Image (cartoon, rainbow, N blue to C red; front, side, top):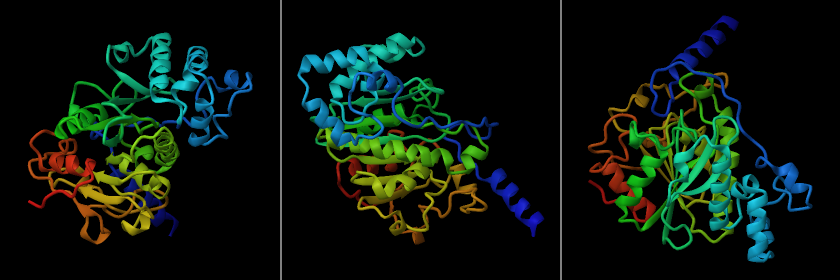
Length: 343
């Protein structure tokens, strides 16, 4: 029996390939970035609101009680806290993150004119969230959650653009004729390559906490409930976040599983959608959970109970947001709270 269990575990590790866009590559173990923003100790020495113990709505109330000049002063003195503090005013976070990026020096391209960086955490490989459009005024909002191999250095890379959260976000916004504000959210520690991190749910569980808080922060500053698009390993994260995630829709695309046996088991009031292109290699991943490895049922299977997203003209693991695909047209409809027309 012990040998059989070890064999099952080895099979799960070998077959549960859930990379974001890197494909079959070696993997490095990652340590999840968790906890309050960097710089919190200095912030709290001034007797300011506790980032770890305060909800995003309490954070929003705190900032509403400050004069604009005091808000700007805090952003100057504590940019890493303000820039990552869910519930802080959006424009104030943009300003704080410009300061943090300038001081960090590693990601100069993110300082280009017009870029709206809603979060920047330099710890680990670096995390970032970028906004395309006007969050406060847009009638519709979407958030893109990526899979493996994404961080502050790669989330907007030029190679394979529709496999990156920035490329997905820009394509989705264009497909809605710029009516939707879209956030490319690389706000968690993603797996690197293929290995235990990608086969297990530990990084997804840590990321789920961050996504739940991020969405609550949007709500706290009056942003409309987003449609959340979850690619590959990102759909594992979204499945774990679903019961507490403030979202209108949850879309699992190229998913290896969401740690739930059915859409009902996600325990969410959001509409649940799933997309899987027949040419996507994710279809070769067994939908199992063995000894803590693997991610369970296929969200795109009819018995899961998710609404089906058509994928005509999409190709491979990263082709769902490519212009001209049925999946992109459907995603645009979902982002605008419509039901995609059947094809």
